[in-house]
Picture 1 (cartoon, rainbow, N blue to C red):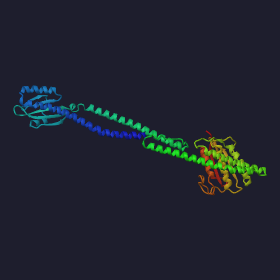
Picture 2 (cartoon, rainbow, N blue to C red):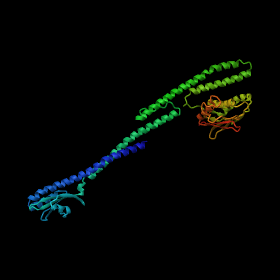
Picture 3 (cartoon, rainbow, N blue to C red):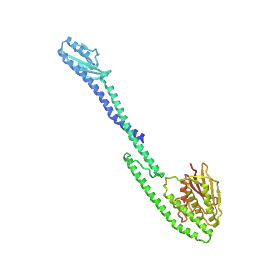
Picture 4 (cartoon, one colour):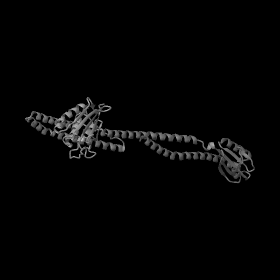
Length: 424
């Protein structure tokens, strides 16, 4: 942008200077020539009165003195063929003047001017003045140099001014883009400089308003989610009390553990809702989290007649995903297996180190698979559920720098792969 502005200003200024300086330079040349011709004409005409009234000897002295005092060549051709002053040939213009016609013309080396006059004998005499090229262009070269210097100076000043303006425009544009990138990355405190020039300042104010509005909406959403999650605690407390009142200690412990898990999930939702998206989440040991969750789901798998297979690499496997996010993701994926496959459907959980650091988590089942493609989007489901399970896992993987991939398992069911990047 800066280069384009400079090129535009340079082209525009150059056109203006050419349109102004070229005619002025030609005018200076013509004025210099006219001035030299006028001076020669005046000196030649001064001799016309002497030719008719002065005797031959006095005329010869006067013409010689005039020729020596003048920068031009002055010659007088009398009617009897006598030549006075500067020696010069009988040119065609001189012969024309001897016939009574005054004229001037450009000749090699300068300009020739002749005047036809009457001498003392009544015959036709000719006064010739020759102006050399050096006098015709006297001072022109210096004036052209001054004009050229003036043009270069004006062009330089215009480029300096344009460069300052372009720098400000480019700097404001870059700062505006940087603020936009910071907003897109989650830094909602980023604000643009509203003192930027012209339309960029308008865009900066609009972008600042957008950032403030996004911050307000997200704050409202976080508070709403936290409030809804907090309300769940009341029925959870009642459920815990009922579990503790059960006669069977094993059953009471099992239900109590389930209530604890739900309460931990609710606490995690509240903490995540109140946490700003720009705040980095701490990593965790993927092997420890996966091992803990498969032990939790093992009892339900046994109750539903499933035979799970676990292939968990020995830890530690540090990943950028937080413990809460990884727990919620694995619970969502295993919950989908139990919710959307018939009882007795086997599944596999595999966790392996990822080349370059991190881990890769697979959850595969032998069920019917996805009813249609593209169900990893938020809120999409083909079975009447909320459709958030796969999206929870996808977002957790993307926050850790990885991703979620859906495929077909060896048993024909669904295969979900989560790539989790390692800690830097």
